[in-house]
Each structure stands twice: as C-alpha cells, then as structure tokens.
Length: 245
Ligand SMILES: [Fe+2]
Ligand SMILES: [Fe+2]
Image 1 (cartoon, rainbow, N blue to C red):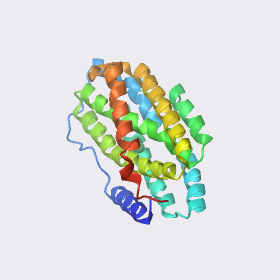
Image 2: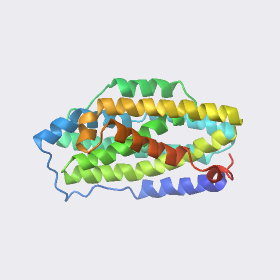
Image 3: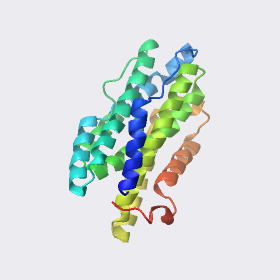
Image 4: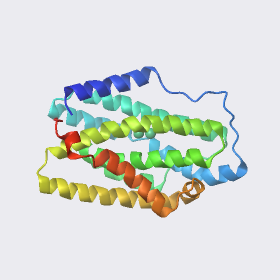
C-alpha cells in the first residue's frame, strides 16, 4: 500500500465523513412481534460489536504509522472509527425506537475485545476483518429477514460502508503479508482462515434464527462467508504484486 493508495483511502473517508449516508425518515418502520422476537438478541450483539473499541485501534494505528512513516494512516483510522461509531448509533436508535434492549456484554464480543486489546495494528486488523466480513453477510441476511423498510435500508447503509472498510483493511493486510517469507505467509494464511471459519461457525450457532429466516443453512452460510474471505484475502497473486508499504 503506497502513498497513492493512502491518499485515495483518505479522500474516501474524508468525503464520507462530510457526506454521511442516511436512512430516510419517510420509510415505513413497522416490525411485527414475530420479527422483533427473532432479531432482538441478534441485532443487540451486532450493535455491541459496532462499538469498535476505538481507543485500542487508535493507539495501535499511531504506533504503526510512526514506525512505518505513514502519518495519513492515523487520520484514516480515526475517520474509520467514527464510521463504526455511527453504525453503532444508527442501530442503537433503531433498537430504542422499537423497544429492543441494548446489550452491555456478550461473550463473543468479549473474546474479540480481549484479543484486540493485546494486539498491534496488524493482529488487530486480522481479527477485526473477520468480524467485518461476516458482518457483511449477516447484514444482508438481516435485510432479507425483515419486512421493515427502515431496517432494510439501514442494513444497506451498513453493508455499503463495510465494503470500503474491508477493502481498506484487506489491502493493508495483504501488503503487510506480502513482505513476509513465503513459508511464514502460508502459515499465517492457514491460521487466519481457520480462525475465520471458527468465527463464522460461532456466528451461525448464535444467530441461527435470523440467518435461517434469510434462507441460509449452516453450509450455505459458511460458503457465503468463505466467498467473502476469498474475494478480499485470497486474490490472484498479481493483484498485490505491485504494492508496497
Ligand atoms: Fe460497522
Ligand atoms: Fe466496519
């Protein structure tokens, strides 16, 4: 990831900070009792996950940017954190409007937070991108599982922004990985894929009612998640051959 890439990402995040995507207030906003029962616990877990632990990420990005001479990375990460905070706020307001209880703790979120707190930027992003890739599949499923227009559009807004997040994270991670010796790279790839698959399996087990309603079974959900993983993190070699840090 060179200076030009960083400039493009900085422009992207600056633009969207000034021009936030919104959910129009004219949309119908009805949630049936059945839908509410089905999505409440699930959406609350994702709302908690969107509160991304910005302090840890900020500190890791500052250390990393200083050591690599990439000052614009700090600003990019700052804007990225603000988008995540906005996701959490959009979901919170929707939940409050529908009397859905917010979660303060969830064991899956707790595990992610502990790992990220221990990590430098690269490990943090390796963990975080798993949640983001699976989140993209989940929000699409949530959109399909509800008839509520407001929630559908909210899910589309989140997916749109997550697309850019995983684009940025994967480009940075692949660049860092490309600088490593081939055997270490292969080992890292295997370990990361296994972690990703384990995380996706936990998401299936803990969010089945929503995912089933969207038409998934365990195998199709894992396949969708792995397709996302392959698209962003296992691109043809040529795609990263000309990048540098
Ligand atoms: Fe998000
Ligand atoms: Fe994100």
